[in-house]
Structures are given as C-alpha cells and as structure tokens.
Length: 364
Ligand SMILES: *Cc1c(COP(=O)(O)O)cnc(C)c1O
Image (cartoon, rainbow, N blue to C red):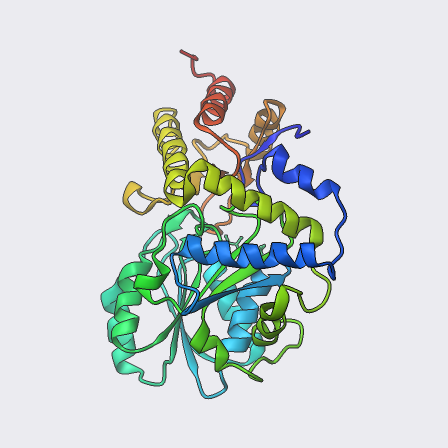
C-alpha cells in the first residue's frame, strides 16, 4: 500500500499489479525467467517502432546513468569524437562520463531554459569533421524541457554522424520514431515512462552499429556488446539480474499495452500536465520552461514569492498524500512536479486543491 503518490520523475508511483509480481522469487537460470527477458526485448523494439532485423534491445543492470555510461564506453572508439549538446544536469553527466572514460569530445551548451537550435549544430559539425557521434538528452528532467531531437538528428544524419539519445524520461511516454530518425543508440530505464520499478535500464541499438563494438568498452561490467552477446542467445543476463524488477517491468509493459500504447499514455500525461500548468499559473506559480518547450513529463516552478518556504510546502502537500520534487537549478529557486507514473487527471485535480488550500486560495 502506498501512503502517498510520487509526483517525481522516477522512481514513480506504480500500480499495485506491477508491485505484486515482485512477491515471487525467480531463478535467473530458469527457462521461464529467461523467456521474460526475451519478451521484454521484443516488446521494447515494438514500442520503439523498429524492426528486429535492424535493431536490438539490450537490458543492463543499474540505474539509468549506468546504461548511458555503458553506451558511451562501448560505442565510442579512441579514434572517435563525441559532440555533447547540453542544457541541464543529465547532459552534463554524459560529459563527465566522457571525461572519466577519456573519450575525445566537445560540448555545446545552451542555457537551461533554452532549446538548442539545429542550425548551430549543423555549423559545428561542418567546422569539426573529427566529430563522429552526437549525443543529447530528449527530455531534460532537470527542468522539464523537451529538446528538439528531430531537427538535431536530421542535421547529424545529413553529415553521417552516429546519434546517441538519452530518452530516459520520455521513452514510452512521448512518441519517438526511432526508425525514421535513424537513432543509433536510445537509452531509457525501467522506472520512468514504462512505469516499472528501478533496477535496470535498456538500450535500443542499431544492430549493425553495436556489432562493430567488440572489445571497445573500457569496463567489464558496462560492456554493452558483451551484455548483448550473452543476452541474445536465450535471454540469460551476464551476471545477476534484478529478477523482481524484470518481472515487474514485464507486467508494466502489459499495462502500457492495455492503456493503448505510447500514444494513449502520452495523451494522459499531456492532459495532466496542461491542467497542472493552467491551474498553477492561475495561483501565481510561474513555470521555468515556456509552453512551447515544456515536456508532458515534469514541470519546474519558480518559488511564488520571497517568503515561500519549499520545505514547509513540501511537508504540507505530503500530508495531503503527494510527494513533490525539489528543483535542480543553481541560478534560481525552483521546485518540480512530475506527472508520470500511475497518476491520473483526478490525482492532479486533488493536488491542485491541496496547493490552493496551502496558498490560501479559495477552493471553488
Ligand atoms: C532519470 C534520468 C537519468 C538517469 O538517472 P539515474 O538516477 O541514474 O537513474 C538520465 N537522464 C535523464 C534525462 C533522466 O531523467
């Protein structure tokens, strides 16, 4: 039983049916369990809208960052160079990983509240022909901005670059045409829009690209190529897999399908988010991201006035059954409200009532 609903970017509120399948212990070696992994891999490709001939799905233990790092260490050779396009903490984390691994790289930063202009990227790629890979975040969960990956990828593909997308907080909740965009590596994790519990992430990888990555990784545990080689045989993971989490994820995928797939989930998220934005604005909460660039996942708000105390606000709203999320910006006082997970418009309506009461706004 949940005591409150998480309005966070993940781990998030899951259904009791997803949590219940974790009541059973499973053996990693057992055929029935290995089959769960194979089904998950197939379904992820379907959600991504890619063919089994061209793409493969590889699951990897750890939180989402582990999986991003596994792609960077496996897919980028010493002779390659990555352009990181960043406007938030998750883009910056990729740069930190590249620095630690020792990858040749360059970074193009825009302010946190602004989306990148694809024309700028075209110019950079034109000037620096050493760049082989372009990496960026789709929904920057730091602020909730939805970056225009379509335009940037088009530019990168025109110049034959490999593309790595951190779609951690958008995949499954925002339609992404991986095939048409020709994304080479797309990364997401179990505990975001697919609405599973935390413990592993996954990569939708162009098979031909990944097949060329043997021996490139500078890490044993994070070697995505080796993980794929082991997993593709019969669904057995290298090393211990998070069995309970994997089973819960399989159930979450069934529930995504029952809801009507990504399009339906997107619609639910968007409806909750637009209602939230409208009501918060009416109460004097200014969003950090403008409407045109706002994702339907999570919204950052400035503190409404000088005297606003987030901790007191947080505690009061928690008493009403909702857990909010602090901000992640250094230059402004903000907090965040997520609306992904098993959260419906009725929940957001309840939340709005709770916030109105706290703010002393008359509840109509
Ligand atoms: C959640 C998230 C990650 C991964 O974070 P972990 O804490 O490692 O799971 C990476 N990128 C984005 C955009 C995210 O939202």
